Image (cartoon, rainbow over the protein chains, first blue to last red):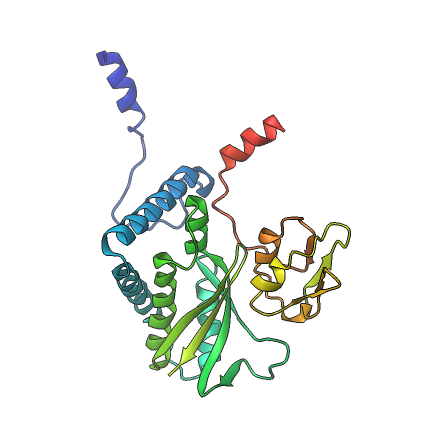
Length: 187
Length: 81
């Protein structure tokens, strides 16, 4: 490589921009469209990490990803107003997470309430529409419902614990290409 | 509410949508899939993906974000097609 080539390469990383420590970035720079390569790279990397984790740790992979998700849930929800009403808590969580894990509270047509009591357990159905986990898995051709989905499981449980102070469990009922059905079991 | 239409000419009555749907939206009647409980459809589109005859049509679906579609691959395919 000649000196000229190196200088040309280095030139791409040199700008006239002045960054001050008090500057708060208010917009995405560069434009999100330009981040497509980064996004795909991240999705690929995440998929490969999960695949490798599964190979090395087997079923233990679920525990790792669940814990990671739970921490994320606690982290995000600690700024929320604490409330006891689980439906209100879920609605607020869905609004704030729009774009990452957009979900709606759902019920079959024959049920009168969103909080369903069946066989001694109390649960709420959640339909996850936009989900970064599903997109990552489909980007890499990996099956849904595996360890990466456990992050979402941990995430919702962590957030619900943080907001309502109640223990909860999330069960994957069904996974689809456009939405997934989960059961939030309240304890 | 989501409206589901089954193309009777295309449906081969394999019953995959009946088995796959967690909300029992479909039933097999006279070797054809019939959406008997469309009100219970949550729009996961698993039936769409699984149907070998591509006989299903859903109206009123919320389309989830699909960032996993590679724009460059799509551009290439569009050029070929």
